[in-house]
View 1: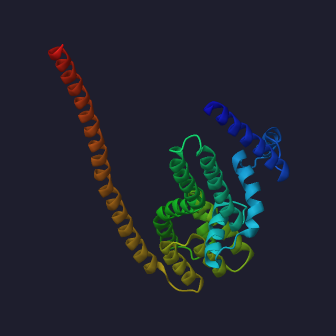
View 2 (view 1 turned 30 degrees about the horizontal axis):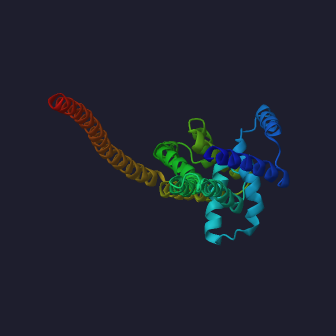
Length: 292
């Protein structure tokens, strides 16, 4: 009886999925694969079919979401940095759609496996947080990578200022050795400087990254554009950044013994469990022989 009920739920879910795809005009799996293959052949970044489906469904509910202006602007900046061509409402609705799908599974499993309902509800909550905050985690990791390169960037600027005060030329020369993420930001900044005002381009560069360390560098570059002698200024911020970098390395090194200690405790617990299992087995065998 339980097996029949489970098969009925699976068939009902399959039918609901196909009807939903027909109503919201989602292409079939075969058509979607062909579209993904065509995008890949054109050099466009591949996208998972699950993301395509959930984004299409989320677009239907996005109109009913009203986001706070401050949160919406923050999410929009994060989406622009990541390169997702989604509105904040659609992105938020996609997180709710994924979590709602798992929550619906919890309701369907309630008559058959009541103990699985709390697990699925917890999974739905975790999936919502994972989906919604994934873009912010990406921005945070990207900013960390960029900030690790800023001390070298400031040192290069200070060395170049000894011979040349052309800010555009300095940025262009550093672009050749810059990392992937920092280089992409430099490309946009250099393009803005070539087509517009130098100072506004640097301010936009600072705003996009949002790093205090980069703000110090941009302040010095703006001073160079205004004709100030910033050689001593860059020597000072290079010294300060070197101190900050050393402190970060010390903090990272201080975390490692704790990780090692945690893994050592896990190994100790496993060894104790092995000894207890062997001891209990021998005791039970001895008792059986004694009473036998």
